[in-house]
Image (cartoon, rainbow over all chains, first blue to last red; front, side, top):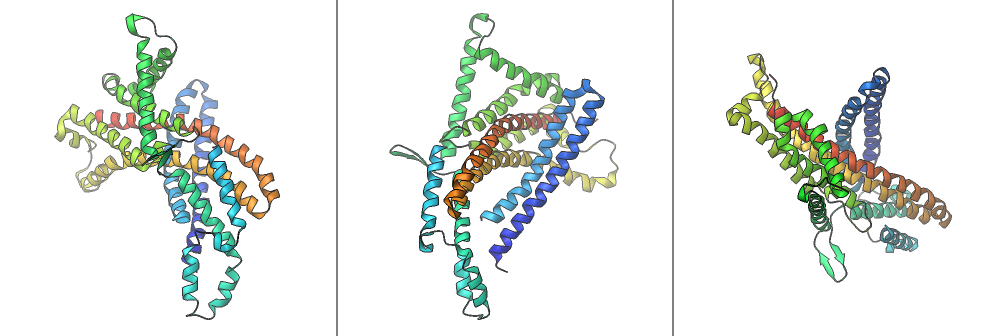
Length: 75
Length: 312
């Protein structure tokens, strides 16, 4: 197969897998945070802060692989 | 934004011209032609690939447009050509930040209660001191590092919001700029540990107390590595977030041109959809600017706190 075709193919598959991973991580995080807020509404502020930090960490890792796929598609 | 749209329209029109006009012809095409004489059986494959040439040439264009929009390049202001637009907007963000700080300081003259801009800036500074620095670094050390954290927060915020203006560029969407920020953060983390415990004590603190001796060969490299991966992750996170939003907006607007290549009806139908979606992403970018400024500041504070108060 043409290497360029394979690179585009890999970029498409990789982008999809990246989003699956990121969505699963942030989805679980948000579900747990909402459950926590529902059980303990007083702690909503603290939970939200911790949630944003954890979401940022997950997002950071997701962006690593997203950049790899973008480089595959563009370079 | 209007300049971008104009560029897109100009980009779209020559695509209707014959294939010879499509300038960035993919190199793979030449490669295929070069290998074709060797293997006659490939003739069928290259014939089948011929109708895709238009699509592939059209695919080369969006990539160049997106990269042109997202990456650094010369900035043309009238007759002047400045070498780097990211450099210009880096200094613009810094100058704007210093100007806002000086203007805010003015309302403190004469011991008055700050009003207007001064009160707004005071709110941000108090938020960083009370919500970010002190809970994560500790009372005394937190106050020592508050100015640095305020600089991180306001610079990242101003640079990101400046990048959303028309005809501008996001300077934090450049790996070199975020690397500079991350290096400052790294230096602050090491300074926090070394200034309190000395060089030897700082490195000794990296080893958690009560660790079995046979784990040391594993833990020492891991701790040294994590010292460098923390700022590296800060660098990549900020860069990717700033770059990604702009890429998504450009791609959505490019959809108009891509649909317009197929037929003019496609372009007309796609235009309102694309503009609505990119407006949504634009508003999301405002949110992302605040969140990323907060996350960079908060993670810097957490890492500084980790070195200033190691595990007991």
